[in-house]
Figure 1 (tube, rainbow, N blue to C red):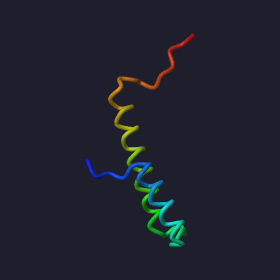
Figure 2 (tube, rainbow, N blue to C red):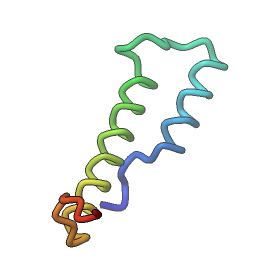
Figure 3 (cartoon, rainbow, N blue to C red):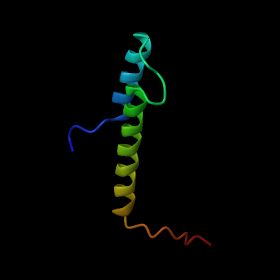
Figure 4 (tube, rainbow, N blue to C red):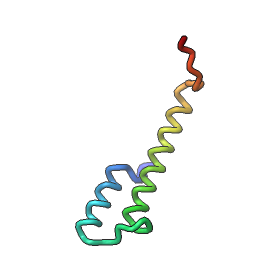
Length: 61
C-alpha cells in the first residue's frame, strides 16, 4: 500500500505536534501515528521473515 505511515512520517508528525504545543498524550494524533507506523513496520518484517525460507530452527553445532 503506497500510503502507509512510516517511522519517519510518525517522527515528523510528533515533532510538529510537540512544537505547536498540541496534544502529546497517549490518545493524541502523534501517538496514533506512531502506533500505525510501528504496526506497518511489524507487518513488513513479518512478511519478509515469512518469505525468507527460514524455518526458525538453529542448525549450528
